[in-house]
Length: 138
Image (cartoon, rainbow, N blue to C red; front, side):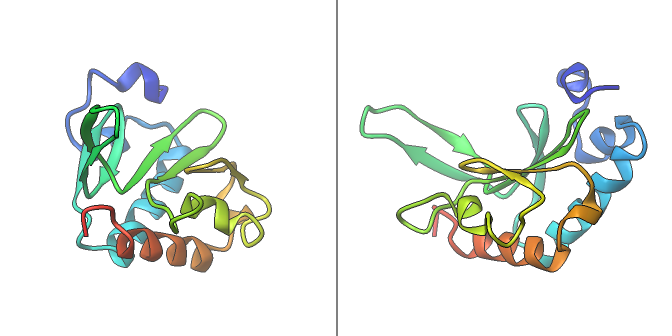
């Protein structure tokens, strides 16, 4: 079952993981365990059809505000998305890891991983720790 088809059906991270097909389920599980180990203070929950870890409240100058996760995880058909909602002040934190995760497709706040074997999990763990340390609500 694709993640988008699950959006309204799953209510917990465990239900989300169970609904993913293999091998994606196993890859997402490995990353989930890594996030829980490296940032145990970021509690998992469902947000926008994916697993979010931790939360913070944001408010833009325009007045728009809301709540979002610090780290997010989604099993997509072609890759696993690791969302990192943190910055170093100038750039999104994920962008600063582009050279250290050369086989991942990295956007502003998203690391897309086709196969876990393509990335150094120690570097991913460092990114997760850095995101947890720079949470916007701290």
